[in-house]
Every structure is written in C-alpha cells, then in structure tokens.
Amino acid sequence: MSESLKQRYDVSAHDFASAGAASAAVKKTLKQLGFPPDFIRRTSIAMYEGEINMVIHGEGGVADVEVLEDSVIITLTDQGPGIADISMAMKEGFSTASDSVRELGFGAGMGLPNIKKQSDDFQITSELGVGTTLVITIRT
Amino acid sequence: MTVSKLKEQLNLETLAEGNDEKLKSCYISDLLSRVLGGCKPGDVWITVQTSKNMVAVAVMVEAGCVILPEGLTAPVDILETAKEEGLTIFTSEDTAYELAKKISALLL
Image (cartoon, rainbow over all chains, first blue to last red; front, side, top):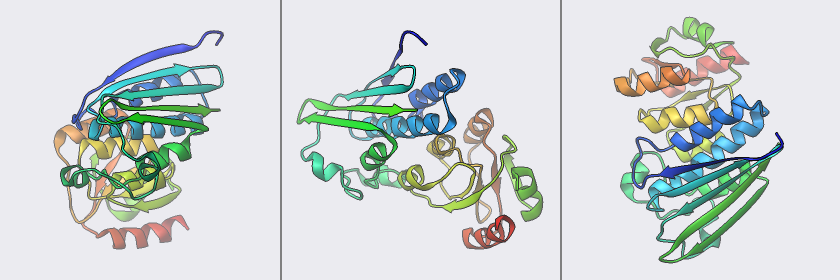
C-alpha cells in the first residue's frame, strides 16, 4: 500500500446499542487488507474501548483512522467534558461512570489502561470543558 | 475441541449458530470491561450479559463461543446480530461453575 487509507466515523453519545460500529468497520477493513490476526485484534479492542469511552463519558465525537503499510493510527476526539486528572484516569479500577453504565457491564475503570496495553504508542490530552483526544498507534 | 463438539459433549442448546471455531480455554466474567482485557481468542466465554454489547465484545476479543448459564436466553435481535457476526451463543441449565468444571475436563 503506497498511500495511507483514511476513514472517519461519527460516534454518538449515550448510544450503547450501536457502540462498536466504528471498531467493527475498521476490523473488517483490516481483515480485507490482509493484516495479521493479532494486529487486527489489538486494533479492534483498543478502538472499541475508546469508542465506548466516547459513548459513556465523551458526549460522542469523531474517530479518525489512518491505515498505513505496517501500522494504524486511531485518533479519537470527543466533545467533552474532559478529564480532570489524567493520571487517575489511567489507573486500573478508577472510574467516574454512573450506576446505569455499570449495570451494562462497563465503567470498571479498565478502558484507558487496556487501550495502552494493546497499543504501541498512546497519547492522551484533555481539557476540562472542551474534550479529550486519544492518539493510538498500533504496529504490526 | 471445536464449538460443535463442545455442544455435543455438554448437551448445550444453540441460541445462535456461528462459526465452528477451535476452542482453547475458558473465561468467566460479566464485566465487559474485564472481558475486553482478559478473554483470549478461542476462549469459551461464560456470561450472564445478554446485551448487544456482549456480542460486540465477544467479536472484538474473538471468543470461540458464548455460553449463557442457568437456562438464560437472549433477545432475538441480539441473537440475530450474533449470527451475522458468526458468533455461536449457547444456553445451558448448568451454573457457570458446573460448566467450567466440565469444560476444564474436556480441554485439558
């Protein structure tokens, strides 16, 4: 692949029924392009976790996916409210999710640490009242 | 061990028929956030979660199949989604513990 493939997905806020649609679409694309199974799995899990975070906390947002020859770069930009303390948010078990979210099986404070675990490079920036951006790079 | 052989051995009832995946181990949790980090490809995932997110998570982690214990069933639209994704969902009258014991004996 000489040029990168760029895709953009809208992620709706609080829409748990369709959460994961963007990650599923990316997974299918990577399979069609013939990437290795472990790479596809890590990419799908990291992106799904990020997408769920946007649905739960981020008031929705946009997922930009760039597929390169030997890596994928996922940029998730949500619409707020932003994270007050990123170092706390990165700790396993720390979560600000509501009880209703927890009843669905999410909000265990595992999302961000798991994204980091699946990725080769992980950048998080956040501004209160503005939003959070994750840049996730996964290499083959 | 494959999905179809597991069905035979454990007398499972099929709710959604998917691919006949090769099974490697077993994972039990109802917390999807945990499953995303802990369930491995080819695991039999035992859970009482029956939402659409359960199917999405099973597909993302590439679980071999899902078993709903204690006779649980899932809504029809969720089973349809599972079929489309090639994910097999079974139900069993056994508890998660009883299922895990039997699966352990079969897989080890």
